[in-house]
Length: 175
Image (cartoon, rainbow, N blue to C red):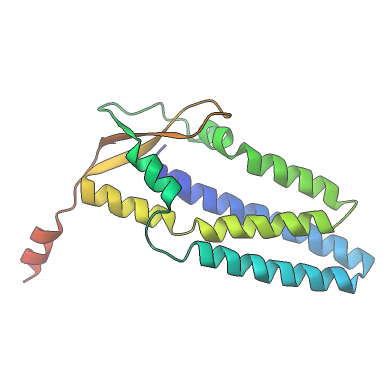
């Protein structure tokens, strides 16, 4: 699976998790008519949104992704392409925490409310990373792929030949 596709899917999965957790929180809070919980939830989600937007404000890669790209080993063959299992392999902590918070939300709606804020932070903080990695790929003429590894080991990337975008000749042709 291409790394840019993985990043895009991670943002969408965080957003989907936040949506599900918010829905359970709203249903749980409305059934108890708890005005304090509603105020807390709205405040926390606003703070989480501001934190996520602050963390994801820059258009360049963040340092962990930059280190991951720099450590990618070069290859001429692509790694095994199984995007579904790779996403489950890498995103299992989000899945487990979402399911756990949804289950606990039936008893205490505060739990999915708090977890929703963290999912919002994740989605907003990672929203520009895919574009930054795409720019690096186009500049260097490479494509980064996620290498299948154990779910408990750090993610690894491989660098394969890609298409280089020649900006100088494109600008020259436009004149």
